[in-house]
Image 1 (cartoon, rainbow, N blue to C red):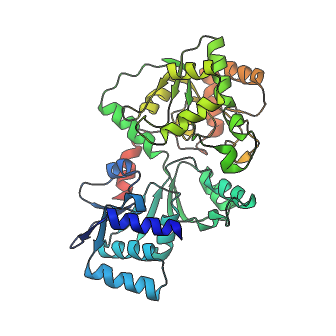
Image 2: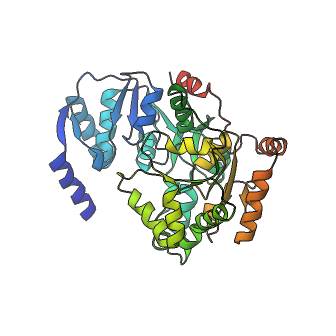
Image 3: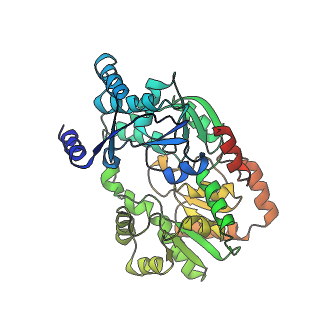
Length: 393
């Protein structure tokens, strides 16, 4: 209740009322987050951006139709206040398609469940989704009062690969239609680098270590030593790079201006020695330009991480990865077993695996990729972006 009161006060102080009149768009982009990607695949002036998070709200839309529909949705259909408002705005705009790249949005699930019969709802996969297993774990551990995975509702899901189909069906997630498209972010990154005529150097780096979603794991998961276990892959990678004098690069997930960057910084500061942390900082790149991490993975012989989405995107580029989950939680495991997954603990096994992968010849590597197929993620093709735009149009 206190949280709702704070949100209400924030809206009163920060949001301006805006009359919505004669705004007819083919698309409603659901959720302001991710619009840097979504707007690039839709025709200009064809979309209306619907802010769906209280802290994003700058305008509160009103019209006669919105007011009437709001009263109907709230009092007759018994929707909550905010959902009644969102539904009423969508009904005013009356799009053909409601689209989002925030494919784990609980709010999107609620609204699509209510309006599926009237509009086509499309969610484009944005990240490697560990949410379902995490929600089940949190419910089991009584961290949450309910299993939020039961709220998932996706009429049309544009996923990385076939794995999502099996994973969602296995966990009884409602998805009416699946379409395998690969990674939209990767498509846009490749287009950006091509248009900019970036001169990328093949194998500029031996090893690229990617920052994962660093957080206070011990507190959030109520597990001892989880955070230090999660950070082991960074410690081992640094140890290996220094021992063999490898060309090493570390890519932060967020830029310095992002408030969440400090969480990343503190995570590695806490879990690495002073020498390891200094080495990380001295070989790090920040998000000071678009798609900085993509430039790093494209120019690296091997990409290393725990659960970051970019491991799959490197596979989409038919590159080499190494992923290791040294924690006690299986929910961080890579979705399938392959030559690129290390299960044995200890630095010695880590070192042997990297040496093996770096020395693997192109023919053996090609065979391993053929064995994987496009199950985890569709292999990148430069025509993918145009094909996706055609589908949406």
